[in-house]
Each structure stands twice: as structure tokens, then as C-alpha cells.
Image (cartoon, rainbow, N blue to C red):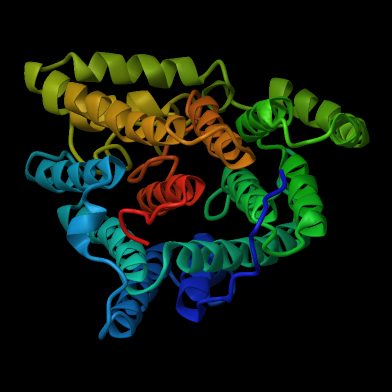
Length: 407
């Protein structure tokens, strides 16, 4: 994972702040409810308000000379697919079965704000400066949240986090994604991240987020095997370290498994997900229109009845089924288009550690998507897709010694 002719990238303060917020906002509702004693809706409104405030700050910073144009960005197919997703999700509010159209519209504006923030940052500064700074902010914010997760009282099933407002899956995913970003920065020789990566990996394992851990191990195994720049000695050391880490947590894994198989409700277990998946399939085929255009944006929470012992699922527990339920066949095609465009971009890169890194991120998303989804966004957030697409384009141009489409 070594890179040649790469120097330290100076931090863009606004991009760093954006990255920090993109991670830290997952704890805003938790901190608002547990520390300030306000309603969860107030915490969600505060998070959205901070997002819009940050958008205003970025807009102000983007005034003046530009580094690229919006038209040049639209030449990248992945960014066009992101716009397709936003357009379809907005249009679906017309027929959405959401519990509150006002709240759903606010959530949609949150997605737009995230994408707009990244686009404006890329417009105002170089892709390398923006992406590296945003990654650093995200990583350090995630480290702060990991410390918070360790301090918080553990749940009854031994997992980290708060089941309602900052659950173990969110903690595990933040840590895994931050590890990928840190590994990318290491491949570009931009900082020393080994201690940070070790801390985040330990937190990921301690979170006991099953799907996330499996997806992370599979993607990292692919990275270690496929990256020819990693020496055999280093590969053996990494695999041995992973084995030791698993052994260190083995007792905790066993204790959690006992609780998971004896005390957990059927709806919350892996086998219980099949009931949720069957519900999605039945609901989609209830009406011909549902098959093609789905139930609309934010049409699950507080709409779908509880499963099992009053367990309310936040989403369809599968990314493909989530998009199928929300947007029908069109949503499935859209999901394939989004990830497929990224895959094609990565495939065109010359063989390198960076190419392997991007493929491992996609593998992580696909594996995790088997048993996890997001209620509004994709598992690979729309803002991250825009950033990755621009960065892949930049990497391809750098490898060829040319200027990127926008850089």
C-alpha cells in the first residue's frame, strides 16, 4: 500500500469541518436526549439545522474563483446517478405513504444538503485537498465517538451504544468506514494512521455488530490478498494480528451469542429478518403501481406495523429490498446504476493499491447490504459517492499523467 511521488496535503479547514460533522452528527440526537433532556424530534431538527448551517458556510466559502464547474462534474456517471436518486426520491413524496410528509421532506433536504456541500467543496478547491481534508475530519470525529461509545453504559446484550439513538451498527459502520479512509490516506502517504486504525478496529470488534464485522473481515481479506504492494511478511503479520484480536474477544463473542440465541426476540435475530423480507415482497406485489414505483421516500418508519414482540424495524434490513420497497423496480435499477457506475470507474483504474482499496470498499458495502439498509440514504452515502467518484477520476488522471476532468 505504498505510493510514490506523493507529498503531505495541506488541510482545508472547511472540508475538515464537514468531514467531522458527517460522522459526529450520528450522536447529536443521543446527546440532545440524554444530556439536554429534549425530545428526539428536537435532536433530529438540531442535526438538520447544523447541516443547513454548514451548507451556508460552504456556500460562502465557495464564492469567488472556482476550481471546477458543475458541468464538468456531471461528466462523471456516478454523480449523474446520484442526481437521479435525489430526483426520484423527491418525486416519490407525491405518492409516499410516509407518516409525515413535512418530516420526510425535511429528511430529503438533508440528503440534498450533504451532496451540495461536497459538490461546492469540489468546485472551490482541488479534489485531493478536499477529499483528504474531509477524510481526516471524518476519522478524528469517529475516534471521538468511539471514545464516547466505550464510556457509555453497555447494553443488556453486552453491545456498545444506545439501541434507540446511537446503536451498535452505527458505531461499527463508522469505525469500519473510518478505517478505509485512513488506509487510503496511508496509501497516499498523507499522515501516520496505524494507531488510529488499531483503535477503530478494536472498537469495531467490541461493538459486536455482526454484519459489519463480517463485511469488514471479508473486505480486508480481499485487500490483503489482492494488494501486491503489501509484502508477504506484512500480510502474515496482519492476518496473525486479526487472529489474535478474534481470540482476545472470543469470550465476549460467546457470551453475546448465548444472550442472542436465548434472550433476543425472534424479530431481532438474523432468522427474524426473513419475516421482514417476506413482508417487503408481499407489500410490493400488493398493487401493480407498488411493483414499479414502490411506496415512496420514508414510507417505512411508523408506517409498517411492528414485527414479533412489538419490534419496529427502521428499514427493510436489506439494501436491495429497501430500494425495492421504496421505489419498486425503478429503485432496483437505480441501485444497480449507482454502484455499477462506481464499479466501472474503479475497473478503469490501472492496477494499484488504490484500485484494490476502492474495490474493497464496494465489497464491504455489498456484503453489509445483505442484512442492513438505511431508511433514507444508501449504505454508501450519496455524499461519499460524489467524493469517491471525483477521487477515482483524479486517481485515473494522475496515473496517466494527465489532468482530470475536474481537478
